[in-house]
Length: 168
Image (cartoon, rainbow, N blue to C red; front, side):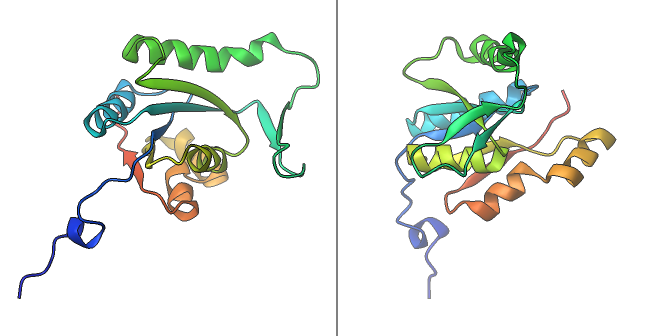
């Protein structure tokens, strides 16, 4: 008796339609972006690169559909835009200017929840994030905040691709 392959069991080898959502940290490895862009090109999917701003949060106690982003710093701060503009510049060096193949979004709130909301609203086919960074400081961050990849696999029904950290 011949058993069907995994693809046959999971929908006749069809990948779901929709964009790919890439969670981009402030300091990212080029390999993370190139892997996501390569997969998007193979699948013919749009790549949404999303940076979750650590200096703001999402006021989720508002009624549905009225979620408002608010800065943790009560005084207006021009420097608050620096991280996202730095991330965008880095992405443009690798992918070229945003357009048909990819776009950039700045999100607020908990990283895993923010990426999950974006994936749901965009009806994404999958989420892509970087793997765990080595070192004591990174380990302490995971201890305090948890792993984004692990959180996404618990929160999401869609596939989550974790690209290993290469240390370069």
